[in-house]
Amino acid sequence: MQRWRGLEEIPGDWGRSVVTIGSFDGVHRGHQLIIGRAVERARELGIPAVVVTFDPHPREVIRPGSHPPLLAPHPRRAELIAELGVDAVLVLPFTTEFSQESPEAFVRQVLVDALHTRVVIEGPNFRFGHRAAGDVALLGELGRADDFEVEVVDLRVCGTAGDGEPFSSSLTRRLVETGDMAGANEVLGRPHRVEGVVVRGAQRGRELGYPTANVETVPHSAIPADGVYAGWLTADGERMPAAISVGTNPTFDGTARTVEAYAIDRVGLDLYGMHVAVDFLAYLRGMEKFDSIDALLDRMADDVKRARELTDGV
Image 1 (cartoon, one colour):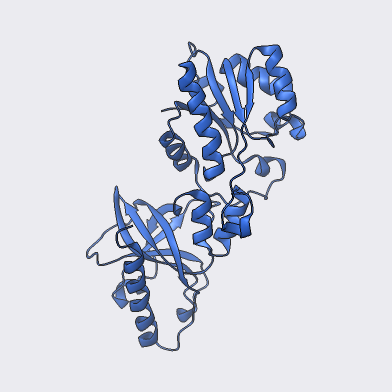
Image 2 (image 1 turned 180 degrees about the vertical axis):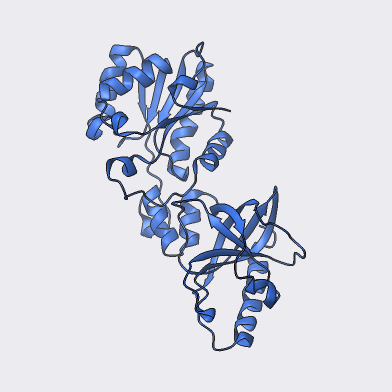
């Protein structure tokens, strides 16, 4: 899959393509419907499928300080999109100037002149251009004038998550923030992931016999609620069952909120400085302050046992 940052990186001889546009944070099951349909139409027409997305998140530019927690950083988002069969991802730098472009200017610059769009695939609530003035109806009008088709996909997917609320990135963020990993993972179609670099912490886990990877997470990451979770730690391509702690380590009067993952039954791991991924499968318990180290160790042993059982064979 080709990856372009900015219109100038699109090859000069790029032909016609099927395009879908959006933030696609998390690439959840609703997003997968839209992107999957774009790939399907592209294969029918024998042309490439292109996903257009933005960096930073438009909300941060329009209302600084309001950046939503990210379900997937752009490199991870690109990996997930590539798995769906997309041929290219175009990341458009979202600036104040760009945010002020009219819907007509956006269509002319991006869809017509740069990507030579044949078909645009979008959901019914798609908005674009300055103050989100453009909608799918206007896009259809512009398409008729500029020789591209617009297809609207019903992306309404529902399940048990959020009491049957339609799947969305905002719903997923709320579920993650409350520690409802079962719900979040239902929306995503996979375990929620947090990434970052392993840094040195207080090393209490090593002293207690449970050495953990202290993950300095990517900025704006959607971090689950404080507590203990079952999941996996992936490092250098190896996926290891893990017990994961999110919180401030109240037993030791900690103040900094951390994400720490213990790779179950692994001895001698040296992950310092490595970029790792932590996948959250299930919530085990809330964060607690224990009266003694022995009480903490008993509970940690139980956490590891439950995490081992939940991840076994998954």
